[in-house]
Image 1 (tube, rainbow, N blue to C red):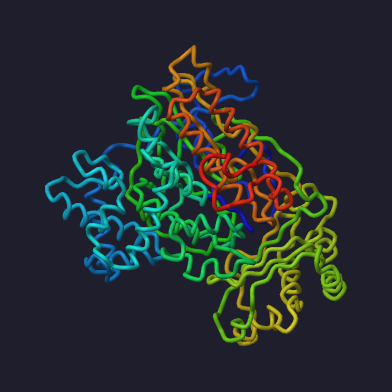
Image 2 (image 1 turned 45 degrees about the horizontal axis):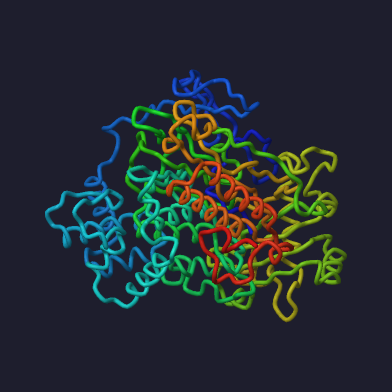
Length: 627
């Protein structure tokens, strides 16, 4: 439920849906020439020499990256400088240099700055203990001469932290994950990926999950994200396998999410930002290089092979989901520049990502899975954590099963819904529902029923939309419990406490977008789709794949975003593993295409037909998951 993306609200070759909550950022003028797009990247005025301008694939041209104007060597922050900044931040927060309490800060904090700072300090302390004569190096740097059993940072931290049972429990979970057959021998540390790097663009849940999977496979991984904070508070409904996958990566031991994650199997949920923070901590423990506050400027073929420019965003994109007001300073090491030696780029920039468009991966539009009701409404109300709201319980109701209740609600309040989900999350009272268009029009929330698109920002009356939501909150959806509105206002002294974000937002899901192919190989020197193996050295091709909402826009009422998103991660990483191991491009693309065809058909109605029954056997190979 909600949008499981990195939040990359960029423009696209497919027209964006107009809605009150999905604004398409206006293009602005780039002082150095070209047009600055919504994802912070610039379309340059002059082509780069490494790219051909005419492509024999119709309109599947390649947009070359801009020159990296801000990336000069003396602007980057060195690792020792970042360690110094981290130490100062920990001192200001009153956190000591004692190892176990410092790890407890890392394990439990929801502050990104403290997470990066405490991890950096812990790693430095561990390195000084294990290799006191080595110069200061970051966790993702190759450490020649060190014990091969210490190739992941968490294995090094184990030497520092002793026998604390809570910490040992986390190490055991990671050891168990690494013990799976697909990760034996670190297959992506050899073959075509030996000495080369994977770049993941976007630190949404699927981008972080991709970085983790590639590291488990032994690859060197850099993850880049434009934003400097994880602020989206919308709740994600996740299917049972996703819950088990997260527990297998440390959920309930590493926080957030809170320790009660997964205690309600009938309504398994997690907020977007909690999920990002969990996966970020796991990524750091596994040695992923995370660069925040930087824009991905595209790839090019250079003197040292494939390279990407990582620049300072001209402006941050707008949040597509709920996001509390406020900002934070850069939590990670500041590392702009050119990242060279690339073998793989994984695009996880959200539903409006242009990464695929810029390398020739076509996006297509399809009809919604539910043509009869393709409008969504998301609400976040401030929590007071008072006595009255403690009686509220999360619920999920659909008209299909409670038709008389939904009819009664429509007759009494004018609110006509297809379904409603309420989650009492730690940060907000979260509701997501599917209102019928006629009821929105009748109440004046939608101004002109003839307007196209119906949910254009200036066709939505926000005040009347908020009144619509109050009527939803005032209806007794659960017998024997107070209404949501009465409990919320009672704890707030009889007043409505307000919205936890910018207010209720409508989404139009009458059209969905997805990638036609999902995966492509680029030929050196052209940036175009690669030719057959007989024409060029296949090992120098660049594999580009899309995951999450950048691959398939989710139908969020069914919780498809994270389920299909995580499966797309495994499908893409399996393709990377095959490619690294020497498989031909044609075979890699064939295996991936078969998995993608299955993924596209996955929904709540088809899951038993598409997926294998025993979720405990799901793994990296697609054949373990799809029938």
